Length: 397
Image (cartoon, rainbow, N blue to C red; front, side, top):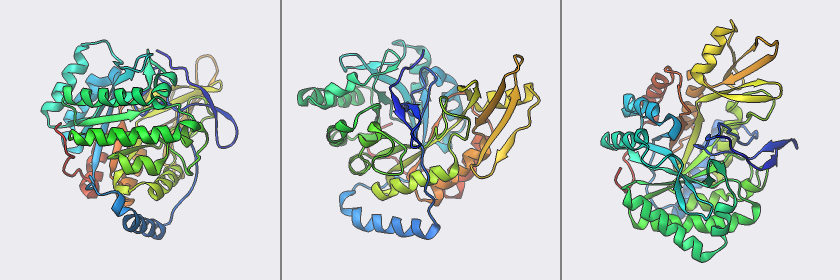
């Protein structure tokens, strides 16, 4: 399936496509934001202390440090489940991307009802003691849909029903909580979205469930466009148990070639987020994929596919130290030049380290499929050095 999304403008003024979800590569299109701001170690420590002192009264629920979330889209759910279970001690939570919204705003599945690999996978993950916190995205028939969520945000009765439906789903399916990924919102939705998140959090907490909310990466409140303005980091951070920071797609399939999540930019995004959200609630998004650019556009790749392409074409894989990203170029049989940037175990490890160094609440891994096997030993080592999982939140897995 393909996903059509509205156009937006990047920070340098060039047109770009609206970002897709952390688990929303249904049509295999996945875009995010950009920025730059490096913090020194002393500034980080001072900011963290200031946040802890000034915001403590507003963030009374205990921190849940060390959350490691596997974000599993339904199309790679079976293999993703196998990978998670093979590395069980590294994970605390799984976020299956399986729910969207119908044209009328009702919660709907994004896979054929009763699809064996999804239902069986959830059962296996649950039996292993992992928290199940599925994603609900504003997707209708595989495409992002603003109308599916906009009417609800501005109609009190519909918001009430939607919140009740989400809580009912979490109760009925015995989920530990719900992850909300509503994208393509507009600046005028800001207060309504904050109200929705606040009320949904209260309703879920009353039932012993947690709320996770995915947010676009930005380095200022405005960010780069309407959907960034619509997400009030501070308001979301006061309400949600986890704020999933989608710090990827600095370059994406509609941009010129370049690193997907350059480490300096990721640090800058975290730096701004920490001024608005308690660090213990920030869950950093780490991509496990790549792009192959040719002719002004790119196709998506898994890490293994990128490595295989390099071998197939006899290309030398370089490692850009500044961005902490691997890349290579090759020429195809038609004479077209390709530029490939992707994530590998080394680039992932650099981001794992940020979670520990900056005292974040955890990380979520976008497991698009066929991740590099070397990623998992790096993850285990990172967790063993201080970013390990802690006790889970209220609510059963």
